[in-house]
Image (cartoon, rainbow, N blue to C red):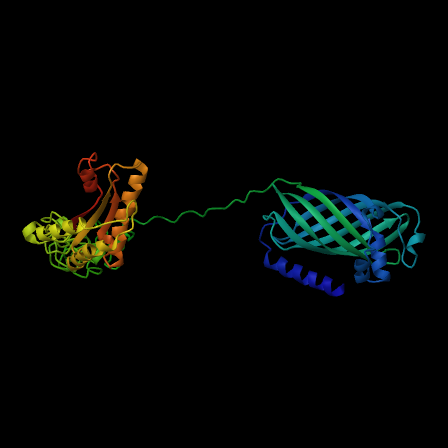
Length: 447
């Protein structure tokens, strides 16, 4: 306890000297509700704090004495408050060396103490923990006593310098008629005086020197008093030889007009195409203004620029305006002949082996003519329902598609579609006509 009190005294003194001129709490009056607990203090004294906590023999609220108190607060520094408290309660006061059970009947206990509160934070914070210690005196019946209170509390800032205080103290009796006990309190405090407004005295302004051109250099030392200048040039403007608005000190090209972005030099044109780099999307390659300094584009890389290319996305010779040449007639004829020699099982999409020769001819053509694509169509006659015929035509076209795919023809070059009986080639009312309508069509196209 002696070490704790010494530590509190040193901390309080240090804080006080360091903050003499800072904010101080206004005189404040607090009305409080309190509890005195003699029984727990006696148990701790007779046994130990650890045993009381372990066995949970500390007093309940019903075993404590209730009372009221009034406290006066006065700020000493930003972190130190003076507090004096007067409180009273009706208690069974156990004098030292007297068993607790033999304490007299309840009588009025009056206690007064003066404390120093050492605050962790300043009063501007909503929650401010503090430590407290001081000296106190008590009167019970005709017996006077003295004690030393030490404890901790929480201060809540409710606004307008109004506070709520909660506090717990352990009061150590230092005279024969003073017993150790706990004191718990909670109260509300309001300031007793009006807040003083700090008035700052403004010293008279020094005389303003004459500065005709307003450049901050008085006329008596300004070599160009009618023209704004700089201190370095004794009130005269900084020179700008090329008159580009950038003074020579900062101009990397002092004799050629330029811009501030390029330190006084002209905007560069790296590729020399007449379009400055700020507007040139292709800084290192000559181009034209229409394409923001880039060359005329050739999207399909066929040597025909997009302005003259009628097929921008497909490569083709200049002789055909950049478009791919149409498939050769003899190639188209060969594919059409092969399509007439594709056979399926009746009512099925399964290819008959006698179809493979014709299909292999198509594979050979597709692998040798890599610029060609092929659209595969499946058709049926009108025998059967529309739904079945549509499904059959799709499956037959897909069978041809899958055969070509298995022979390494790129699927990006192919498509398959079924049209059912919707596009007859001949009369469905005759056997010959129906035979013509059951067909596979392969249309070549240039990619």
